[in-house]
Amino acid sequence: MPKQVDHHERRKSIAHALWRVVDQQGWAKATLREVAREAGVSLGQLQHYFSSRAEMLAFAMEFASERTSHRVERALRSLGHPPHPRDVLRIALTELLPLRSDSRATSRMNAAYVLEAMHDPSLREQVGLGLRDGRALVERLIRQAMSNGQIRPDCDPIIETDLVLALTGLAPLLDLNVIEPQAALAAIDQHLDRLFGSAS
Image (cartoon, rainbow, N blue to C red):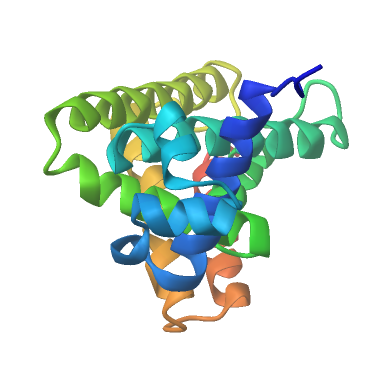
């Protein structure tokens, strides 16, 4: 009997190979041929699943987003019920920064994804949709915290949302060793302390 191939597992394996290539060599080196070599499959096998780098990158980012969500959910389970919105924002922000090997690879993939989307109309729409969805989640959390009296009611939820999201811009500073991880965490904590301390 011919060996059955789990196509979803094969696609995940290729996605992991793409992460490793981007993490170790950069997006410019992530050709279909190089990713196939890293994944231990032939170029023809890889092209059976992904016809272009953009298609491969889009799938890898969807998978990375799922993994990040699982890490956030796992961290949230260790908190109280319901978790304080400050803690939710802190966990989400730290998971998006390259502070560990798994989040570092995801952060580098995300940077490649955004850069590629600037020149690929189909990716641009997909990336923009994902970013808008993420932003909407943060804004809803901030508005709910304001409604609950955890953030001062005269704050502007739109501006506060954008300021929280701006903290994800610490990623390249960490990756290029401009700042240390503790400095990034201190900046996040100070901002959140100011935001949530303003209600008292």
